[in-house]
Length: 317
Ligand SMILES: [Zn+2]
Image (tube, rainbow, N blue to C red):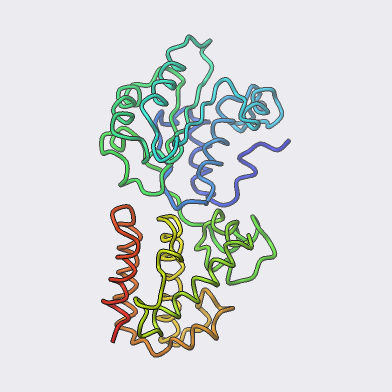
């Protein structure tokens, strides 16, 4: 079996840096992998764990086939713990489990704790982790992943080495998931995770129906009276999906108004988009920032009110 790091596509610079650090025995004991969702940060974290615990590494690279390597790959390693949010949060009980695990004697093997979506650690959990993050036991490594390092508590941030990742290139997306339509690669914005979503019919249907809703929003003079918003936007998750799709449509309309047709993301839907060509570009700019704001504040907003007020402020008149 090939080692996991060989299976990580893209992020060459970060991979080399981490491998060199393992080889020089200078790998930081607390690291934050920060970058867009769905680009392979978790995959790389597990791969680094494999390189660390491998029984027969070659130049600090995992062999991929020893017992330790196989157990990491199967997520059965006694030396690697992966933690992810339980519901919306990483709770203090989960951090306590990590600390218990680390307090057990170990015969000087390396141990790796991977905390996925580390920004979802609640304050109690973050505080419980701090001391250990600052002075980890020997041969213990922490890898935290997050989409935005600013979402981590500053105390966690300051104790960790931040390693930043970028979205994947088109070429790497095509290597990960070949043979999709070009608009899918473009719309995924370099996030392979999103690419997978797009390749599922349900999400495609969702986008198409959201475009219909978008058209209705801009074209119907009685949008509020004639629309059952609650029926269409059932919960926050679906509202968030609608807003994100609307954002790409708005972006496409702006791009279209600037004559850059080749940069349209939803290029298969151009006929519908062209019908909305009447919206002034200035309005589109305002609307796109309102959408971003709404996506950010989604947890605080009433869904029906949100869509009504977006319509009143942007589409009415
Ligand atoms: Zn190995």
